[in-house]
Image 1 (tube, rainbow, N blue to C red):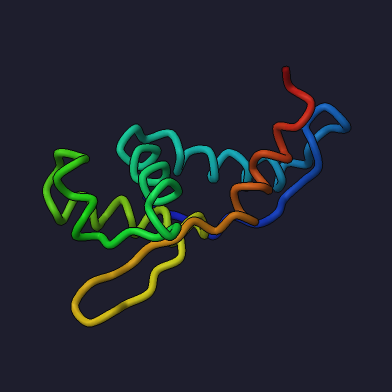
Image 2 (cartoon, rainbow, N blue to C red; image 1 turned 45 degrees about the horizontal axis):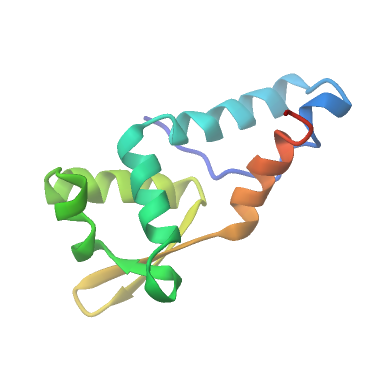
Length: 111
């Protein structure tokens, strides 16, 4: 899967029509989130103590192999939803709140 960084693409969908480029960017962002394992990983990182989680802590709860979890974390990072910091041999992840806010704001107005 080709992953592009998620940009702050557009205003709320109900305030005007998206351009083709905006629709493609937004669809790519939601495609990244359309995987249940990635959604779980994102929520686990977002709710981790101190707002960050070590990749080593995420394998068992997801029930997938370490390479699979690493792949999903990379997809989320490449999309800009997570940031990664290398500490020794482990990678630590944090949610990028601005990227998530951009997706939330694009859906603003839906009830």
